[in-house]
Every structure is written in C-alpha cells, then in structure tokens.
Length: 179
Image 1 (cartoon, one colour):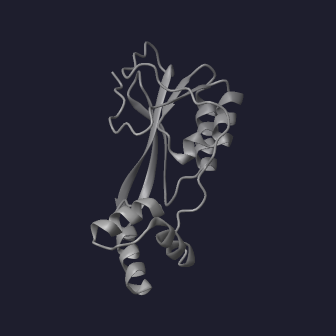
Image 2 (image 1 turned 90 degrees about the horizontal axis):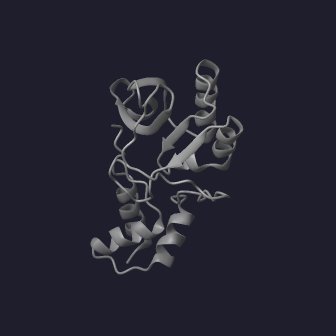
Image 3 (image 1 turned 45 degrees about the vertical axis):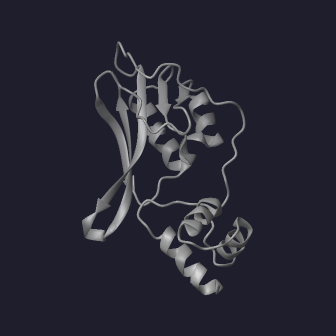
C-alpha cells in the first residue's frame, strides 16, 4: 500500500462537506474503504501532511448542564439561546458561519455575526455588544458544547457579567425546545 494513495483518500474524506474528523474517525473511514491500516499510521500520515485538526480545547471548572429540555421564559431577556449554523454564500462559493442569539421569550434574534470563522473572541465581542444594549446580569445563556462556547475566556466573561451559562448535553443531536 503506497502512502500517497492513503493520503489521497484521507484528503478525499476530509474534503467532504461538513467533515471535521480527527485521525481516529479517519481511520474508521479508511477501514470502510477496505484499507488495512491502524490509527497510529493514520495519525503519522496526517501529521506529516498537516491534516490534523489541531489542539483539543481543554477547559477548567465544571460546566452547568441544562436541567430541563423545555425552556419556559416569562419575560424578555430571561433566557438567551445561541448556536452556529453554516450558510452557503453563493457569490463567494464558500461556507460562512452564522452565530445567532435569540431571546427565548420574544423569539427575536437580538444579535448575530456572519463571518468565515467564529472564534471565542467573536463570541465575547458579541456578548459585549449585547450587554451594552441589554444588560445580561442574571440572564441564563444556553448553548451547545462548541469550542467557542466552552472556552475558558468565554466562561470567564459571562461569569464577570454575572450571566448564567448552561450547556446542552454532549452528543445530543436533538435541539433544545424553546417553548
């Protein structure tokens, strides 16, 4: 088995839409393509060809997970939900990321950002804008476990603003109900 053929297959796997795999998932995909290969070799090849995802974000402190799927908001700015969606921008022939923050009570998007990538600083800056217009002290903020949301800097900013951050349960593909 030539390494070049394996690398081509790896690039094919990683080139598929919405695929963000590490070496272990790539190994599984290669085995499904009838390669006889182990994870150590896949890791080495991906590392040598700069195909690894990068560092895994490690956070400190515990995360507060949601207690109830259904959110019952009785007044505006009691609970905010946020998530990132992919949006195809035809004119640029590429995907952009849309981070939207919705007020659960009014069902209005109170802030959003659309750009090529969304990093933890982008989340903090979005909350700074929200906090300037609608103070977030005491507000419950519900999000998934995306790297941007679990970052220590985001958690620290929300704690300093006295907002309560909740995380949906890990590996739960069902969206939390807003009503």
